[in-house]
Length: 194
Image (cartoon, rainbow, N blue to C red; front, side, top):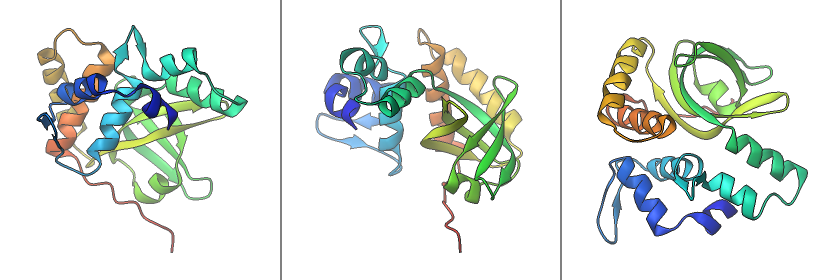
């Protein structure tokens, strides 16, 4: 991805891993799970600000998309948001998943082939949603939690929010659910069709 190549530098990368409380030294980053590198990149691109803008916003301003589709993707990234959702319904015909947004009290439908095959009703998922004209999808990173622990997760989220000082809400939210994913998350096992 060109945003990573053009804008991720050591300072931004270290800021992201520090905020996420990932251990590192001068030469190594100590991830607990293989997927954590993807989480760091998603967080750095969409939530960490430099010069008052996210990396996606800087890329749009400085370089921009080379086509209408690239510009639509950039705009969806810039207006993306994260939240904790409860799976309400899956649809194998059109690969749609109806999610209830537990932090914003509304519903959204996303399209995701593998998640649709892998998630079941009442499973909890923290993800970044990108909205396009006519459909929505995730950015590709998900923290999956077992059904039935939403009250616990929301209570823990409120506790973590109080401990994280002087950070914008989007950073607090991502950091909190990253931490909760480490302690209470499930591995995402994508199911392929038979």
